Length: 380
Image 1 (spheres, rainbow, N blue to C red):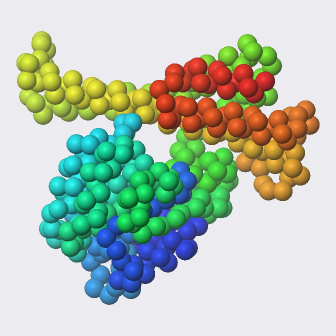
Image 2: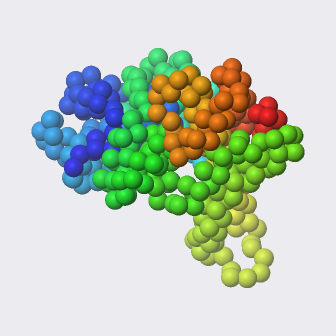
Image 3: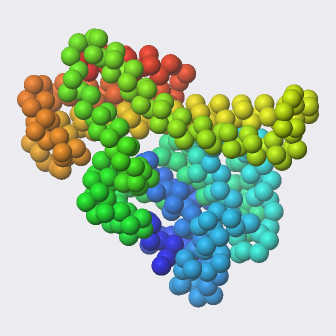
């Protein structure tokens, strides 16, 4: 077992990080980039574990079995902080707290490590709070920032970081990981990895949840019945409903548990009106949950549109001569028939409409249903 085992299809990255963990090329700030599902946060976590591994022999660090490796991989190590947000952005107060934490020497490990998994979700003024700490780090502190691409991070930050570029692993490697780590049936693992387009997290969800696989197939088949404006409007409503239901199903139970835990911690009465001092804290929790719910729906809708995009991607592949494998192999006959009814130029225009909708939903305050309806009309 090794901390590098989960980094499927990333031999160059593993070699780079192993070398640094052994002391060759180690620096105080790192920027992990790669498309969603490439494993950039997993790479940062594995690197953090290797740097603080208990093994004395540097060539064995990252063993995955010592107390340091296990606690870092489990995100419970006192000297390694993992920062991610389930809201729209990381706030400036959260960034200031990070800077304060980074200024402390490690209590037991070699390094105090700050892993920021959503570095692209910081406004410019928030990122500037981190700048000085990254420019002039304390001697035993290492920063690890994760983002989809270098362009998602301010140039003043990325110029001070060593780059680690990840790529999406081959679907076969993702399937092998699901079989090895999660005990998934090989046939199910192969289908899930292909449908997820090598996104490890989504592949695991599809492999474990038959209903998720059915929802995805329903989404992918939508264009087959798209005839006229009425059908487009109905498709848009259904897409938003699928994404919202999927997001809410995971949020409702969690929200209730968080509120119950907070009330218990505050010693709130079982019935009646809460004291004023408690109401403010409960209100803050509810506001945070609303922000998290908004991001959950946005992320879920983006995944739904990515699934829809895979349909047109396959159509284009067929129109261009089947140069690479299809994502939705089980729909080949229907895809071939659909491809005959249009041109590659039309398919590209439809893919562009989907990508524009994704951008509008994730980067602006446009109502999701309006954005999806506009997109659906472009697909007729």
